[in-house]
Length: 174
Image (spheres, helix red, strand yellow):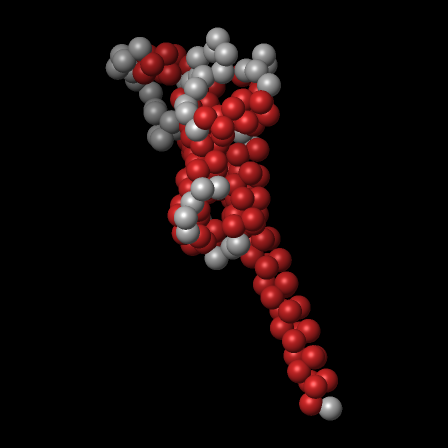
């Protein structure tokens, strides 16, 4: 994913990252109905500090999603194309991981409670759970489709430029 993202211009990379984290946004909004989503993102981007929504404790999926937003914000200040790409790739990865963790939290609430309290628990972790893995796989497939679409669009745009340049060159010979 990093390599596919790196060949794209920064503006297109940002579009891909936003599409990736928008897939978790409705889940976050449902968990935090009293917190205005856009305002929370703006405050998070402004302070660049991890913070919980007002009077709510975030679960691990929300914390991973928050990291996705912070990585996206950090990309804006990257000094090079590869640094910005690294932040946006991390943002995408955290968005997928948030969905994977959230699925595990929904499917295994007792295990999450035990884990959260530092207790040993029987059952899969979010990395071992088939349902959570399928959620991540579905998210990665969607991101791959987005990246393919963006690459095709970029190639088509480049070919159009080449065609125009060719016709201009050919006309100049006549």
